[in-house]
Each structure stands twice: as structure tokens, then as C-alpha cells.
Image (cartoon, rainbow, N blue to C red; front, side):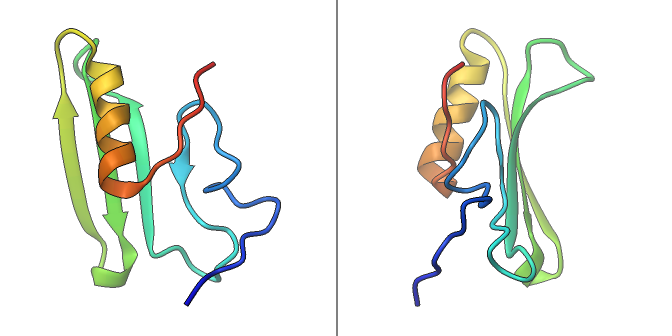
Length: 86
């Protein structure tokens, strides 16, 4: 089954570091974010919440050189997260 995405769909109209949530469906099945950790400077994480499976949380943490780039690349490969360079 294919979903037709509307013009306000965050999946197809991604900002610099988007949250992947489909506004075209009544309730998101999964939310994915690439965020810089507040507890450790220069550390980035990919955080995913699976609402279909009672809110399971997945977390991948990246640190060191190119941590942000590696986190974005992981999110793209693992979840298909779209990313537009500023």
C-alpha cells in the first residue's frame, strides 16, 4: 500500500535536520530525529520511536570526528531520512 503525501508532509519537505513524521497519516508509526546531544558536546545521536510497537525507542550515538555526518548518513541508510545541507 502506497501513501500519497501532502504538501505539508515532513518526510518529503525535510528541513536541515528533520524529524521524519508523516503528517498524511492520522498517527505516525515512527519518529526519527538526528540531534546533537546536550550532555556531551560534539556528540550526535539518531533517535527513533516506534509507535506501532508500544513506543519502543532506538538510539544510536556518534562521537568523534565527523559525528554529525555519520549520524545523518546512518539515519539515511537505516530509516530513509531525507537531509538537506544548509
